[in-house]
Image (cartoon, rainbow, N blue to C red; front, side, top):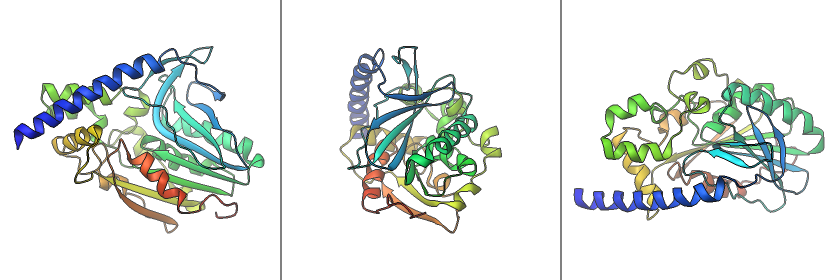
Length: 290
């Protein structure tokens, strides 16, 4: 059994390295098109023109661009999200590496939403991972009424996976190399370390004003996806008890009366895609649902 696990991990690492090399060449130097807003804290890109229903999609990735909007730095293994909805307008949000953190990013995002709300009948925020935490904390500053907020695999109480010192106490050298392929070490990542200053002061009460869907992910029993194999292994070794990155307990920390919670079998690597597919079946994008 141990030999099989080792073989799976080695295969997973080879695939990860291949993907990582490909992404370095594809992303670095590529132009991030249709940038609508840029600051030290957030970058907002329009990825689809559509009707007066707006989706703001936060994958949780960080990237930085230069004056010509060329990508100069990005998270390890970052793949630009390719989430499509049939008719909606879609904006994607990213965190620059120089971002001061999730608090300031949320403030700027809420100001942006408040400035464009008259242009849309309905606004849906879909936040994966740390982006879900950012959206939940920013809800208290949003003044638009027709808003839905979706959080997917969100570490509301943080995750030890973001704490390199703690993780290195649990992992061997080989496992540390896997870990370093996944995590960066900038402010928005530090904000989701358990008991960080941000998390101690985070205020999610603004969610009470909106339709809130919280999607909780947990490692599937079996998967042929190499990333799932690696994350399930890290979930066990890191004693996460969740989706390979975030524990179920941290994802389930909200109990507002208007929160609808859904469980999915997916690792952190695949929960955004699966979670958005579930959303398409819920018909939450009609104006006036909030």
